[in-house]
Image 1 (tube, rainbow, N blue to C red):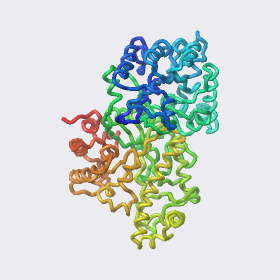
Image 2 (image 1 turned 30 degrees about the vertical axis):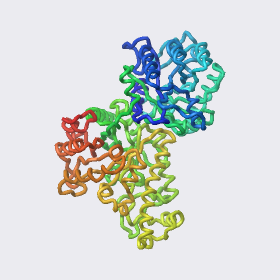
Image 3 (image 1 turned 60 degrees about the vertical axis):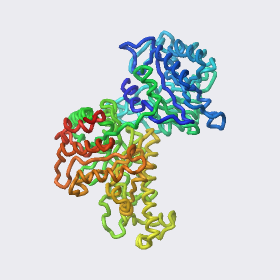
Image 4 (image 1 turned 180 degrees about the vertical axis):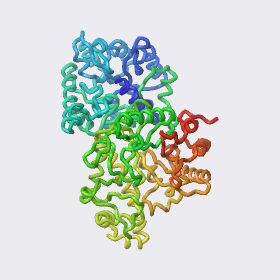
Length: 639
């Protein structure tokens, strides 16, 4: 379980935003030890360092506040001070009583302490199953010490769940995943637990811990601190129904006065930082760069499960060698290279399952290669087969043509929308990942959508004629139409992310855009895509910077022009990712690695640091990773 505790939390270490007058930051501490040794955990902090941290905060004008101060400010009370800090301590270690409480009293600092009831319920001479092993019960607070802490007037006791701070079996391949956000897999029945069982398991646990804390401290907790920082929308809803409106996570980013308090972010302190490193955590940092490998899971899949595991192992080794920060991992099968999903790589109730391996691959990449994984999925291009298609509505062209070539379900049809959102709900339910990449099928041409539900939608919601010919003949109506379609696709992609977040939160959202939309903004009329719209609404805009696909006569010159045109957009340097092509699909041959590498180097020289490539072929070492990683790796530096 150490993998869950440290590798998973490593994606949410630091907040990289500057202080503002009404900002506050939350520090996440765990065990405090007399001195570090080979047996201490990565998130342990030495007692001497804790004293140094508190002393530095006091000497440099930082004000330690309580969660109640945040609530008061949100309710119109006393505004938060500049440089506000909240202190949190997780798990209920004995060291909180031994080291932390005396310091809090000496500095008059408030704090929040998150308790796992099942650990403290163990008799004093027993052992606690903790981080995958049995440890002495004496590692944790006694009930007497807990009561004294709760009565101190400085410490608020929060719930850290009763018995969800561990892993459960998350798939048939044997991966342990966080209990609170995982539908448990039963190896005997070869089934995942039902939604009813899952919801009852979570609610029963939170109820039990609330009652336990009330029994031993006299107070029912109003704060939930999510184990490993993992949570989801249904968990938030359950917690709120039990009176825990305040939730503390390990999400990245700043906390701002008046924000919702159901997802408070924290700085996760690991490796016992020296005072200089501790201070650096509190100050502004430049945005971290994003380096992406875009991977076909079709390459990993094999009918032979032994060979499939070997394929996954070699992919992990390749990702490690590459130095990328993120993998865009295919979650649907595309055997015929049509771009249309006919089956999926995760359990769901809507489409055939080719193999339930996306969750396994994502978890292994995250915990063994240390990368973020985005589920690469279509927005509209789903073909569940003729029987189900009869009950759905597809995108149609006004002239009967195939439009962009993809079979797509209509985003203007309520039954099609619900079908797609159901797929994404199951993606969040049965797989563990950090983001979603929306496929390049999320587009509508200047002749689409001419299906009956779409025409009815235009008339009812946009006040347009229920006829594309009539719309396009009127310049005002035409502009209103294509801009509204752009917004429709954007908002629907946000809706499917929200569907997935019912069981997996938070999820970052990226979307593939065609280069033509960037080079010629008027082409929004033909694509229903807009780069400014994407930069405003998504975490990342993944621009297909593929010169051979665009038939560029001079690929390098074309890329330079693309960079110059797009970097003028607000937030482009922080949110725009250039996806380079590693294959020339016209000739079906790979782009020479030296050429691909030169494109990346040129981007870095021009100050562009967010880029990646597609496709990757691990079996032919294409591109040659030994060469490419010199430019691709997040650790690479200009010579």
